[in-house]
Length: 322
Image (cartoon, rainbow, N blue to C red; front, top):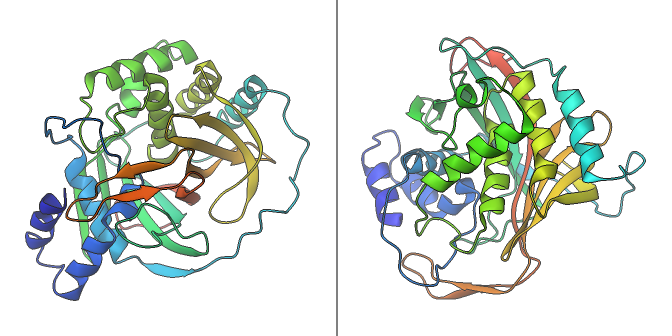
């Protein structure tokens, strides 16, 4: 994977010198998925969107801003806890039905997304630093097939990128929670597992991960977003975390899934139940072999991803800001 990333950097004239080295050291940070060790070697296949994930890593290595944000985990929840994951799904769905940035997918406009994420503590280990933040700005085409971001030198790069299923795929009638599960499940089944994936992840976990990406990165019409929230409680193993905190320190409520290796959270506001961000943490000790590095062990309880979506607005073209 590092070889592929190196080829990407070498082919990008705007990224040179020390910037290349910085990008390499921050590769895992933007990929935002732990680097697992499969139980046995798997065939090397390139995901359709892998090239852009590498480009995303380069951009985040040259992040538009950085800083420290102290988050206190002992603060009290802002509202009364929800009774069940079904109630949470329904409240989030009803909020999504009136979400102001939702719009009919169009090839001519873009969704601007600004995120705050926690960076890696020490590359190539996958632990993120709870006390530091970087900002990432991206533009997603409203047909759900492209993404644009700054290459770190003021030039926008546009590439094909997506979670394997588009907003248009999900917007075909009937738009129901059952259809969301069926269509995303079919996409998951059709995507080969590679060395870049967690080979131990269940089908349910992969569906949960895909919904998380769709909610955070894709321009979805209100009916689709609502159906996705109502679909989350239908995934076996999904529960509620009553007080979850995103990377900006905002308290919310989370859809929670615990896999064999990582527990995942999709965090929504405790006030209006709109999407806030994600959190991921290891739940078991695991040994992995990073490319070109020594064998390392990640302990249970290690934070692996922490994000907060700060802005999501429809704009006319990549580079526009609301």
